[in-house]
Image (tube, one colour):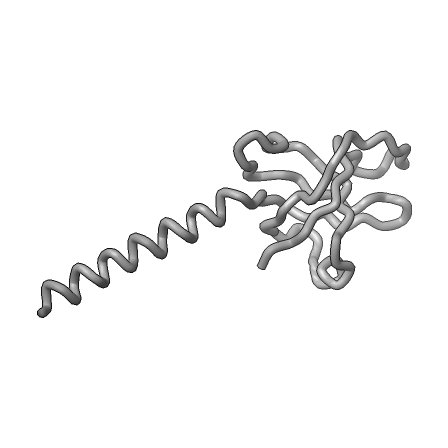
Length: 109
């Protein structure tokens, strides 16, 4: 009986870790930089997904939920999904961090 319980626990742990890893592989990781005074909110990608935007790419982040934006702090690490993106062709002040892409993102807790 102890062997059955032990095997069940091991299989459960392995299955749970596989599910959490596969979910994590669909998310980007990045660092949020709060804009202001004409500058955009920028996210610098620190971990990408397969066939996604490259690491160190910067995006002008448009949030699908404005409450998420209000809760974020400058320099905070976030996990997020990119809902859509394109090249950023906006003109910014010279003092701004200038992003390469503009994207609508959803922060995942």
